[in-house]
Length: 423
Image (cartoon, rainbow, N blue to C red; front, side, top):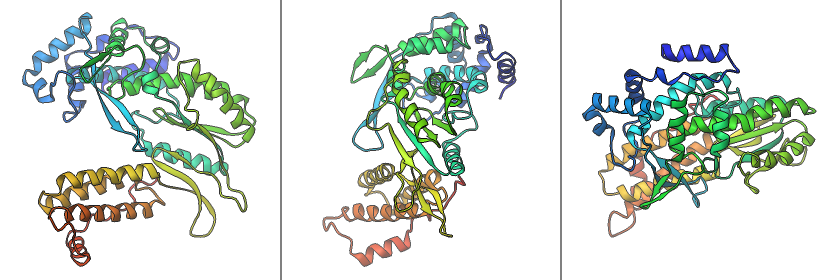
């Protein structure tokens, strides 16, 4: 953290109930330059087609122009460019908004300003898009807490189109509990109202904060801090008969209870709580899971952050919570590999091999947690034969004999997978 950020964090801790009216003065040319260095240079371009290299060609002038526009109120937030990426089930798509590069820089500057303030406010249960926090920490917390409780009743929470349905009026009210700096609130308001450009058509920004925007994860955390985290910690838990906990990563959350009656009561009030703030829980995907083993019966499972959580047996034969790659994530990963192999099958073999090794390593870097070795090895095996399948189609014969395929994979084996995440 910079000296200014440390100062903001100290003030946030010293005055936990204060709404800060003077924050924008911290943003100067150096602050924007730091924000530029923190902004990805290889990301997709916005509606103006400007790249990081384009911005850097007249760097000092662009920084000064951006600073003056932001401070004076003359900055006009351009619409984001909407693209669609496949969801985990492979059938639906997720809309992603791509801001312009200079918009990313300015948003990054505002995030750096607000982050130390909200880090004081956000609760321990929140892990998504926060400094020094990760999805693997969230997964470990779920494992630790459920193991300590001996399992329980888990509400698998699914918010329908969360980023697209954030209510701007409620979000402004939440922000103003801690931020009353007119420059900052004006900028955030402009980003929220900028709208999206899709297939040449502009859509007004009346609801939501485009997923893919630099500032959207912070705004999402602010929104759910008040709607869910603080409510669950301060209003719900004191009324429960027994233990309960929440773990949230952005809009993906689980609530777990040691008492079934508590879980059912909370599940009953959750839709009303979310509806009050313009949010809807998915009626079929939000469910109560009996995650406690009973003799002769198999406990239900639930997915969280790409892992299926289930009860299994340890090497000593005792019941333990285990995790494996969720089916939809496993399938999506293989589909991406197949798509890549299809479109790159005519490249030199060693180039293909090098890239596939990188992709398998990337998969293992996330899914390589304790107890998931079988799924990792199966993924690596399937990738090998997907590669062979598409290499077969380089020629008119359309088939590589078994012995030649085995020799190829012996000569160019994919990188071995290993457990890399101790969670």
